Image (cartoon, rainbow, N blue to C red; front, side):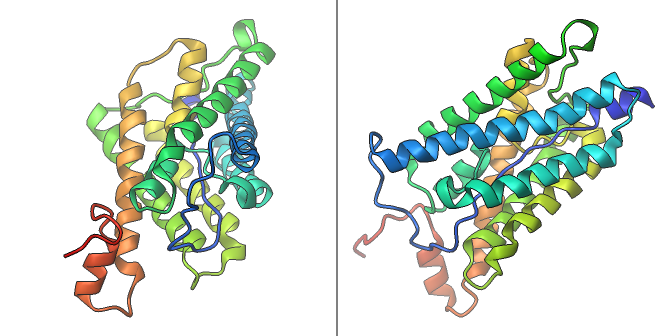
Length: 271
């Protein structure tokens, strides 16, 4: 059905590709340092091309009798994420997704003070990409490339939570654990996104990324159900990161796991 494939594609995105750093939190790059500015530029550019390529597949599909198809759109999202992870993962961590950034911060794998700047960079990249597509496809070809629930709000929320949980669980495993094959992180993350778009696209558009939904919403002025795409991915990503964190330290006794895994406890707090 035409309407089915028109909504069914979207995706999010995604990703931190730096090798483990249980203590990878850099003491905090100053907000005026060149390295930190380079990271922000990498997030803007990476998010721009992620949203441009992924949403372009959605728009082209709608304008050309569903020629791209749902599997094609899923492949486009998965491939662009894979390519970008290997391109800028070593610079910024290749998050491209506020849910991923917040999840890493919640498990103390990313400096909390840098979260607002990363989120702003990601939103800027998404909005610019959505604006570019709007300029390229004007008039009757100006299709909404954002995400809308294709069912109840509860169904959409649960679906977004689950697929983002899976995404962050995979990211935590392949990109932050020394025991994993780090060189395959991009392929594993891209494949997860491809899978999630295929199963979640028809239901929610498979956002998994607040700025993937918010960028097009801002450009087109379409905010229906936007709260779902802002809240569910963040909650799902945090849950996925925390669950992986609890199974990461398999060689430690329970009391040590609960002590070191809790991000609510301050470092070096005295007993």
